[in-house]
Length: 462
Picture 1 (tube, rainbow, N blue to C red):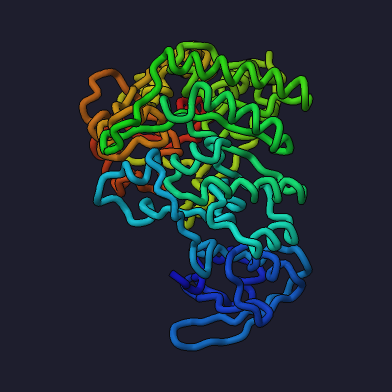
Picture 2 (picture 1 turned 90 degrees about the vertical axis):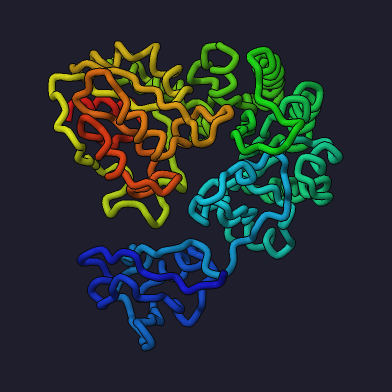
């Protein structure tokens, strides 16, 4: 729905604060322009001494912010799209939104296919609703990188997967964007029996031939929850994962020969399911799809190497919606948060790392090294994702009720529980359970830590 952005935060001492702006003020216009989104707003607000039309209650007034060009104004708004989010008109059988149970917060059910959210947050778009006007704006304003779902280059396969006839032709926009020099990262969601095997071979070959300008292409397995109602979808077996990885590795080498870079990168989940070690750091070529679950394990191991003083691989640069959404704490998601528990805990007990199935697989081989760095005992607590079920083993999809039950029934020693920040939006889990409710069920304090080796070590020492 169309809406005027509302002020969530005014930074003390900022131009906005000096001009008298307050939380809950509405920004109607900037320099007599009503911006359609935060991209246009940012371009306008970067001007020297911008004039804002501000609504407070029923009254509107004009406010001039005294600042030079490019200086931040000190406002945080409650939304990034001010007109209407471009919703998705595909009906992909593998879409995880169709696999959500009822009763979760409404925003989780929104299917977007908006290139602006792709630019702002790294959301993947299929380009089936992309237009000439969109292309003109992206090119003129250099709105990159963008993130595009490819899935298959065979037009019939792609149209069937998206359940949208435009899926057969919408990759023409990908070619047009690349021709205009826009940075784009691609994604292939692998569905066994649908677009793997020979279809994957063709997709990687044609991507290398037709879309060689792509910055990266991530290959990730589909996620299935227990709410899946699509009979032909199934999860990867270890044999499936090993076979698909062989295909990816073959085309990595062909890309390296042709382009001087590997281009294609498989997700950590495929390696974990296959029972194979994750590749070396240089294979990921800067970790361009780190937040898509590609290279996270290797980046964690590299981080431990650096902490031990024996590694030199540069850290992965992470950005993402979960660090920018309106519910973010005033000091950001990396701010320390400790929630009180029903019992004080045993300060001599180990720090307990709360994680999911795949997190446990990644952390077990290096737990002794993390323990040595922290100087305190560590223990892993794997939380079963009963809420979603299926193959949802990533820690980011853990919900509050499952974490609460796991902490309440944990019988091992615990000095504190280390909860990765990716499970929270503000202080709420995906199922709207609050952090305080989970902490109240625990026998020791719950500490929210960055999802990193440094976060674990610092949290364990706290």
